[in-house]
Length: 591
Image (cartoon, rainbow, N blue to C red):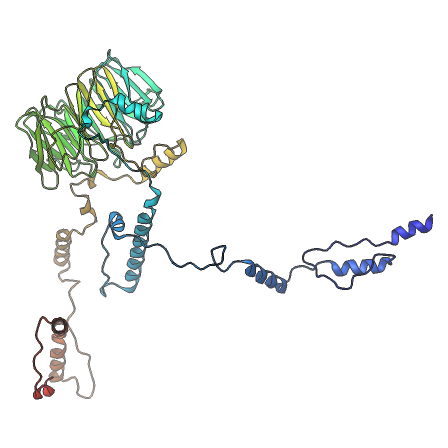
């Protein structure tokens, strides 16, 4: 019994081989082995700590496992490099021309400009290459052969499109407190309704979720969202009020009295208002301070719109003129005679190049704001009391209780409307919903949402306006927007002038500096010859050296012009423009 136990103790188990251990050809047979032999064998097989040699071997094995080609089959790419981008795609995203780097810049400045140029070209190629990631395309309504799209009703469109798009056409019957003014947020997610008799409501119009509803028991002239959906401004009978998204009054600004129309400038955080007293006022909503108040001297102001491209305010007057205003000027920047009667409505498109106006003369006129001249004009049966441009250039006009949508108004005179809809009561406000094919209509009977195919932008920039933003994203965007706020003094007719050099001001500053110092610091110092010994600095030698250097710059300029002229002459001779002269024996003596 004892012998069997000893035999089991002395019996050695078969050792498990690891992947890093070498395979021994001579393996010890399993049997009776001494304990000392077993311990020495186990010590031999214990792996040592990884050394530099073993690490190098592992690295070589790992590199051998990697395929030399990106393809699984091992084939080489027949078209190496990135795919070339078409030139028309590059021109679409080009923002500035390529700068020419000359020797007048220092090496450091040249390197910095070259790096900036390379970054711009890289961004240009990436933007053009990523066009494939924007599959959404806008599409307009097209009728059958001989069919006018104006005769297609909203019910027909709602039946054909999907359920989500069909639910965007609806009516709100609010015939007790109308007519209604409306306003969408910049991302098109929230809607604000304000009845003239005091009824106010804010809601997420797609989900029909009501955020707040109240009655201020006072006349409401206009309503506007501020930079986010958490605050909005309301022009009531006497003063201007600021409310939050729950309808709680935040501020009552008594400096802004009798306000009729408002426009919010999102990049400047400015709320522009015009009143029945004839004043144009600007309020900085980020600090709650009045920036400027200007008396327009044209009587009651109830026609107002903004230019989205340069934040210029357009005002329509009773004498048929339209004036353009900036907060930094006390006089109008431009004054245009647009109609023979009073101006009723104004609208500027997204690009800032075209302005639509309507007046009591029942004319609808499209103006080019680059030349301030009319492009097209037509006469509407009742005249347009409300105008609005969409993101894709469609123009909506409210004539009585009929809404007419026109297409390509700046190219051809609007003969027949693209779409048409009749509502229950006279129209009081129009606005296209951003990033949606929807037109919001505020009228005396409530609110109507109209489907207009091709009105909204199909692709949006989530860093600018995100319809699907979360609470955290909205808070981050608000902080960044406040940090990047543009000052009111920078609002001009031509925003590109901000990046140009003011040559007149620089010359004036240079003259003032010369008068103050008594000499020109930028003037080149005259040449003074160096003093030489052994009589080489006599008056005659000094005069010779001065004459030699005096016109060196002029000689260099003449030398370069002669080289350019000779090069052009050789090119003309090679192209056959100038016939070759016959060689003479005396040509060898020409210099």
